[in-house]
Image (tube, rainbow, N blue to C red; front, side, top):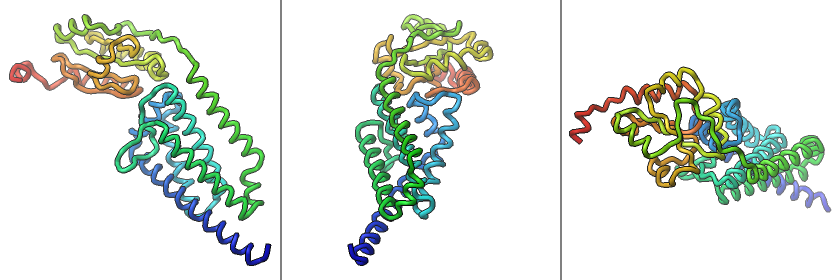
Length: 312
């Protein structure tokens, strides 16, 4: 190969690498900015995947967008590019595994990546395809780095990094198989004040003008078990629930139309109904005791009056 051909090849490698760096950098910066601007929404999305332990779910929701935005700027400004791409490859492998697990569980949730034309896409084969395309772009960028500077590539993507990447990929596959085959005990351990939902109990509470809290749960939802093992056992909440009818609505034990009537798509969900039979507020996802107590207090102090209901 002549010197001129080598120069041309080097230029083409630089151009391809530049294009990949800028595209990937812009995509991940945009994704991170959406997460940073909507922290509560992204936290809810992370919870919906039902994979991250409740104790660290908040930390994960904070760390992920800052990793993405840092990698994005490193790519655009051509700093530590191999390391940034390596981090993105690992992240994409984890995201893809999480989405596959959600699909296997039959969860209908937002992917949590970023909105496209104002629309938040649901987890599905299209979002998986997008992840595969992004992975291919990252691998392609690594290939261009290997051509441009083999020594830099070997130092940044040596055997240790390869072992870690393969390990993470295998962990994703194992988690998917585990999610598909794992059968958990679907018997929830209710606190004393909670009862299994029945139409008779619901009608009785409404006729006596009692506040009602409907707790929608699913046997495949880890956060539902955490809700009963933690916040719902709190003594302060138990005291607040003394004159309230708390009914647990297990997804597998009630008609589908009941769940649809309250527009529940995410588990756990708490629906607070005031003493006049109106839905006062809802809590979607796992919430701490204080959040439940605040919603319960607001329901008890509903501004509705009997006169208003009669006029309607």
